[in-house]
Length: 143
Image (cartoon, rainbow, N blue to C red; front, top):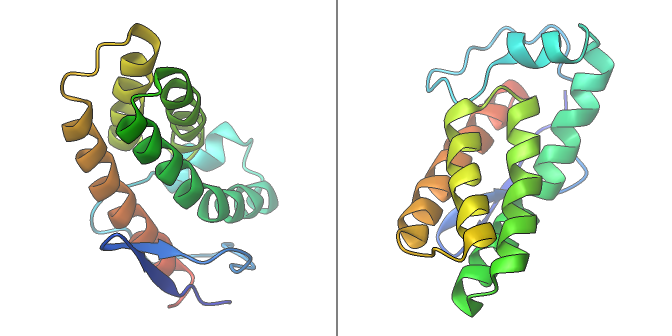
């Protein structure tokens, strides 16, 4: 299996892109429960290859989406916030990462309604949940 190296972005470990070749027969549990492999496989009809692709896409895209969410909050760009959070929410739902998806949904709603109170706290929560998820996926990959 390929390994995942983590870069640091504003104090947050971030996965590099283009690595992780396979996730089939992964028996290393996620002690944090940040995602649900069984739920993800069920959603994908049990297709291990598709799960592998999904995880690769998530590890490539999620750092960029998190950055977009953070920048949109700084700029108070509610439309960009809604779009980035919505996209990230969808990826997290496919992985069965319910808590992280719920946090992304809160940020999406903040962008949609313009009600930005508490959005920074949600951003901090989402960042923390993603770090746990990235670490869990890097352990699966054998890093």
